[in-house]
Length: 206
Image (spheres, rainbow, N blue to C red):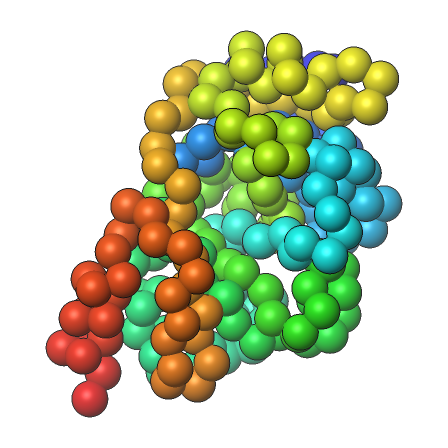
C-alpha cells in the first residue's frame, strides 16, 4: 500500500482512475474508494470491505452538476434538497440507469449520491470523476478516522492499493434519504435531521 500526503493528490487520482482501490479522507470519516470506470476495482472494494455484494455502494460526486451528469436531471424535490444541503453530510438516494445500479450493487435502479463538504475530497473528485465510496473499515466494524487506523485495519494481502492521508476525520455518518419524485423517505438520520430537510423543502419548493 502506498501512502501519499495531500500535495501528491494527483498521483492518488491517477492510481484510482487506473483501477486502484484507495482509502481517502471525506468530510465525515475515511472511505474506501474505486472509480466507476473500473468494474474490477469496485469488485475489489467489496472484497476488501467484506461487504455483501447486495448492499449497494454510494457514490461521491464533486457537485450537483456532476450528479446530474451521472444519473440525469434530478426531480424537483431532489434538486431542491441537493441545492440546500450539498456539499454536506447528506446522501440522497435517487433513480438511476440500470448500468449504474448494477455496477454498485443496487437491485432497484437507485443509487445514493453525495457531495462531500471538504476541499481535499472535492479536489480529488474533480480529478477522478465520481467514485464509489464506503466507510473505510471491515463490514460491521467501526469506521476509521485517521490514515494510521486505515493502515492498521486494511493493509495486507487483500488490502487497499493507495491511501491519501488527510489527517484526522471525526465527522458523524451522513444522513440518508430516498427521494422518488416528491416522496421523501427517511433511511438513516445523521448530522442533518429529517425535520430540517422537510422544513427546507416545504419552504423552498411550493
